[in-house]
Image 1: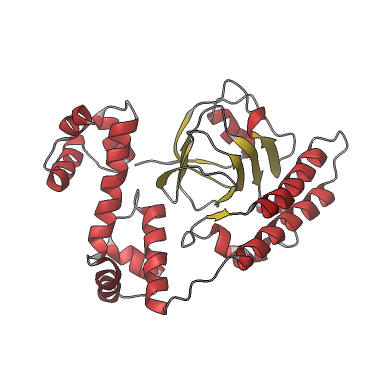
Image 2: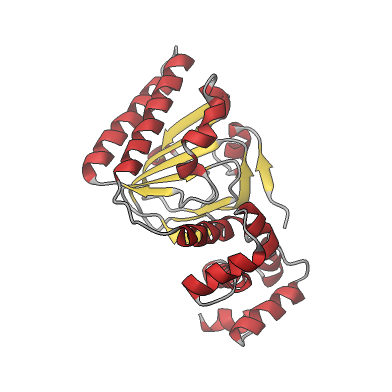
Length: 291
């Protein structure tokens, strides 16, 4: 599967058919209510060479597909997308909140530390979302609103936008640290990281060796961990994630089978049909007819 990569914010906005554009190369912010009516309602998987934070205050029927997990967006939640993520989405017109893009260049001279300082937010091995209580939502909304206000001023200050972004990031980090801590052992940490990696990378990587290398484990040890916490193999977890996405696309889109096969990384539609029937005892056509 070929995944489009967008280097610039306005290039990505144009790809979504939005009339919104950024007058600043390193960042952009808007309220979801400010999305132009021409914006597409579904975006195929892609990468972006900049970071994204979504603040969802009220959710409609929108779904996000990053961490390549298809889930409904939930209220009072922050979502974090890095340049490493493959990300897609579907939306309606009822979403309330903010969308913020920024490039690391905006954070000069702090850009080299962002990966380390905020890795728990943006890493492929992280959950990439954070649920907030009402007090935290009220506080973080003020920071988003302040960034929005200064971004659209006629004479904006990049230094001020940098300061506001750093304030926003460190506030989010403080909310994350305040979350209840579930004490888990090292093996379970590896298992959770493996699940997150699979969710992010299953489109392009189906080999257990790849994930073991990312986690600095051997494939055999990774299999042992998966058997302990999921009673299955590491390979089976990848296949189940792929099957989950296939079912979602068959049920929720009108894409033909060849398009779905291509989107999921199968070289030929027949390979996709064989994989699907092997795991469900149904052809893709039979599954779609019954769902």
